[in-house]
Length: 408
Image (cartoon, rainbow, N blue to C red; front, side, top):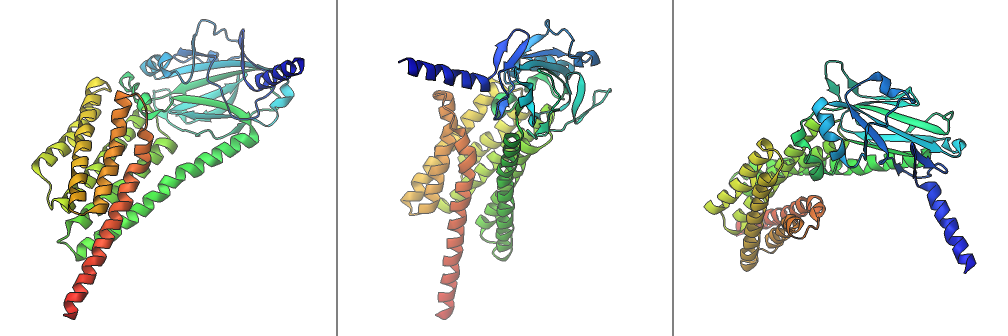
């Protein structure tokens, strides 16, 4: 029993060495963390600007204590003045373990970072006239000085553009105005390279979808009577735009204001893709787009987009968009029923799958279970694959029919 207790104590001390410990006046590491460690808690924040706030001996005890992930504790004050300072102090029991240590940031704006009062990073530019040129390093590792003492004070002067009405945007995008991690060199570099590769995959798919869109646009030139090819080409172009906008959201040098615009364009293009899918399916199953379907399209694409852009985030825009998704989902299920009934198997599967993915937003509201990542990841790609397969097979059947007619 004593052996088990000793082992538990040893493991707890080992984990404690990796984790941070809150102590009076800052954070303490018993040794340097070997993996990416989020420096989230223990920060002090003050809106405004004063070069004296970079000094390590500056008394910040009266500043607001904030957590970087809890943006509501500091973002309203920051956006009112568009500039503010964050300070964090931590201690390392074994300063020698700080060798090959790196600091990594992700931000929506520009910043000047000081380490023990000395300039360490300048990311973007903060002009005296209030102009901000954003630069997001996306957790690029920056090597710390090996001569750092056991007491380290980080001071970050941070500026961005945007209004306080954009604060709910961070709940939707799951972004943070500022995030800081610390790790050793190998882990920091591996994380940075992995993130770069992962974010370039959607960008590569955008070139594929745009290329196929051009192909179907050429087919429409030779077969102008078939509007399906033109609509599918438009769908492919929109799909490529979604990937490009998503890349900007994750890899672009954005501030809060431009994040809001890019996110709105991303949502608008996503809804446009869904509308083109419904139009394609309706033409396949019913040979036309009915009047009530145009009404659903207007609500889902037009009305919800107007509320999203001109109204501050809140209950009303969410209600309008959610109602549009509910109507859209119901219509996709109806189209799916008639597609299966008439023997259109692939369009039926497409309509049903897209309706199920649209339902993930209803689950978010009714059950508070977030499955919307599956929608954004799979919905349009499944529609792209299935509709492309159907149109290509339809072209092959039409060509085969023309040959048989000629032989007769």
